[in-house]
Image (cartoon, rainbow, N blue to C red; front, side):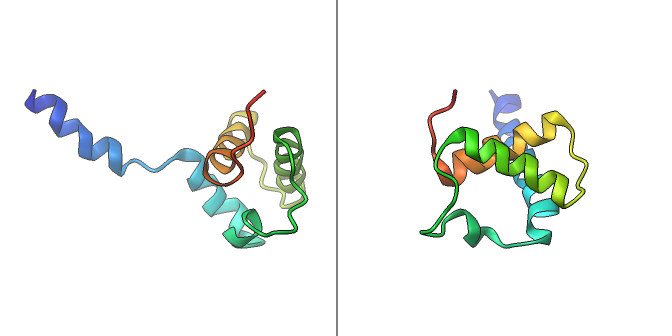
Amino acid sequence: MFATLSLVPAAQAAEDPGKALVDKHCQRCHDNSIFTRSDSIIHAYSELQARVEFCDNAAQAHMSEAQIRQVIEYLNDTYYKFPKP
């Protein structure tokens, strides 16, 4: 039981890889308020996916497909809450 309990703080301390990518790449151009604004142009999961891909290209972040998926999942889980396809 002690071994299991000792892993909990490490697991809690580990940052979501999607959040780390948002902090590194997305916040170069804007802060998190863009994800909660009332006039959002993102209204569906597919639009979120397209926007993250657009921003990756525009910012020349060169994220891998796996990293793009992590960003999409983080943004959706944290801000948008769209049903996943």
